[in-house]
Picture 1 (spheres, rainbow, N blue to C red):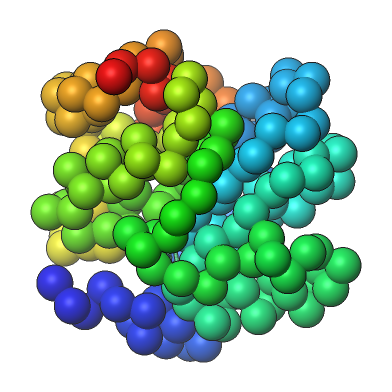
Picture 2 (cartoon, rainbow, N blue to C red; picture 1 turned 180 degrees about the horizontal axis):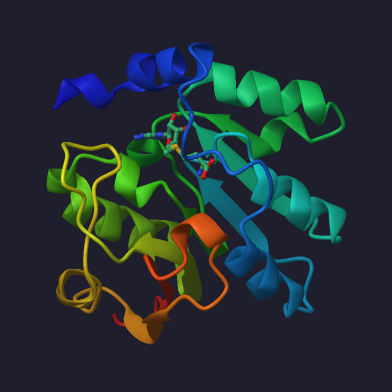
Length: 196
Ligand SMILES: C[S@@+](CC[C@H](N)C(=O)[O-])C[C@H]1O[C@@H](n2cnc3c(N)ncnc32)[C@H](O)[C@@H]1O
C-alpha cells in the first residue's frame, strides 16, 4: 500500500488534516515516564509527529531521547519549536530502515498509521531496536473502525497473538488514563524484550 508513504503524511500535515494530533503529551505515556528514575535511558519515539512525548521527556530530564518520523513537515515543526534539541537525536527516516539500540520505545498512534500487513514487520523491527530487556510501551487502539484507515484499529486478541511471539507481555490492559476522546478505546501495553 504505497499511499501511506512519506508524501501522504507530509500532505496531511501541510493540509492540517491531523486529527490524531492531541496537542500535548499523551497522559498514559506521561504517567509511565514520570515513574522512571533513570534519566539516562535511551528512548525512541517513532512516528512521533509533533513530538509532544519527546519534548515532555526532555523537560523531565531524560538526556537521550530520539525522535523519528519520515515526514519532513512534522520534524521541521518540532525542530523550529525545539531549536536546542540535539540534531543527532532527530531521525528523518523510515522506521523500518532505522538502526539503533534503545531501552525504551514509546508507541502513540504510530502502529495504527501503518498498513496492517506491516504489523508483523513492526513487531520484528521493534524487537531489533530494543536492547535485551528493553521495553515497548504505549497505547494501541482497542476498537475496529468502520472505514478504511488510517487509523487502522485492532483488538486485544490480535495484539496478544502478534506480540507474544516476540516479547514478554508485562501489561496488557484497558487504558484508564486515555484522553477523554479515546477513553474506553485504547489498550495500554508494556512489552519486554526478554524472549530470545
Ligand atoms: C497518525 S500520525 C501520529 C503522530 C504522533 N505519534 C501523534 O500521536 O501525534 C503517524 C505518524 O507516523 C509517521 N510515519 C508513518 N509511517 C512511518 C514510517 N514508516 N516511518 C517513519 N514515520 C512514519 C507519519 O509521518 C506520522 O507523523
